[in-house]
Image (tube, rainbow, N blue to C red):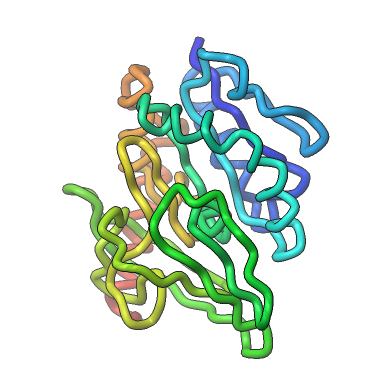
Length: 232
């Protein structure tokens, strides 16, 4: 069995992010999901057989709470990243792993595992957009709805944007990537939006690459890609 740890699903499921893990579970009977409450110590702290860790989008207030819950385990997270454990982090969850988050006069220290910082623009309208980008030989789709942007040189970026914006409006680099750590501002069911990337994660876990409803979600991906190339 391959274990996937779903972190804090009651706090980090604003746009249905938890279904990313549920979808993988349905793809392969060899996957076991460990759902960790925000009141529990993450399983990855003591268990060595966690193949993948998932963290989704949350509110700004809960984001700060999650940073403090994960801070005692920073070294363990760093160890797992270096070991090659898969991490998939979506929405503003990516900001938790940066150096800090600026919110007006406040500076909220992050986990400091990646060399970037984020800035909240809470007095502005929420930014909403979609993007098309590339990762290795894959075309990746995403959509965002956020009050904050991230800044840095992004030498460890995940996606190169073809259409849309990156971590902020002045860069075409999106997300963070190191080893098998993948973070993106994209929201919601990222793996259903991107069946080719879902296949990649399954292969990394050594589970082949058969997908649940593969024909249907591949057709939906191709249709969405054509529409976005036409409209963005």
